[in-house]
Image (cartoon, rainbow, N blue to C red; front, side, top):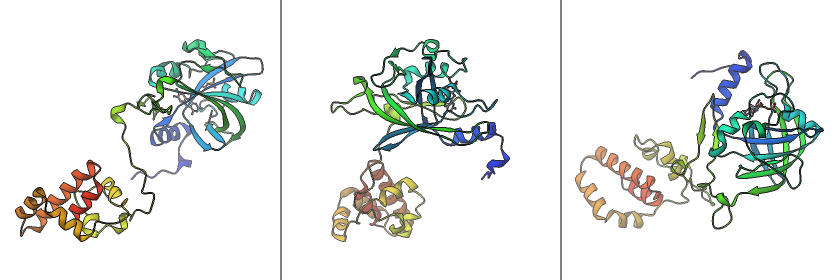
Length: 296
Ligand SMILES: Cc1cc2nc3c(=O)[nH]c(=O)nc-3n(C[C@H](O)[C@H](O)[C@H](O)COP(=O)(O)O)c2cc1C
């Protein structure tokens, strides 16, 4: 394992490790305005939502690594503490990237990137019409994390109004994760796209108390076949099947055949049963997997 003292690295080296490790990051496409009315649009992937009540997002226009100057977005927010955070989807990713070019102060990146300004209802900066979700925000605070090149400036923005395109809603009026087509930033020039085929669900942990991986019998916990993800699912049950349930399950044709074929060969039996349990876990049949494992 490579172990690095952060104080031994330059800001450029640090940025490379941190951006590749803390990934993927959602992208805040922030529109701001200065006192004179000049509009600015820039992406920031040091961004997330940090509070629901009040609804608060935080993003960080850092001091430029190359010359320790501050970004126009930050300067604008000090003059007019309002912004629109526009959520980025795949259809706009190249225009988003183009808008991150270091254009001179006063240059409107909506125009440079060919995106459409849509007037906001509550705040002065316009929204990005192409964006599927737009948050009109009031900036509550800006926290400077340092004065050296690369230092972050946390912009704490309270969301006052949300605009959501009908195109990304499901029949209940909620955002459909399969429709929104998010992109996110990783290290270097890498991005990722959230498509329906790479989405998966993880059931929330048991509302009551899952038994935990530590309560799984040693032979199962140390299986050469079951993975950490498998153990995580097994540890999420509230109680194990009882003997009657297991006996009943053992009467099924498939299990009977498996047990008969491995009489006197406990090692093969364990492997076969663990493989069967793994298949059941892949299908989300956790309780059944437990019955198979407890047959050993
Ligand atoms: C997808 C993406 C994410 C970015 N994230 C950040 C970030 O989190 N913080 C930052 O300071 N710069 C970030 N940048 C670079 C800024 O967008 C860039 O410096 C921009 O020119 C700043 O514009 P401004 O000076 O008009 O505010 C990012 C660029 C891209 C393309």
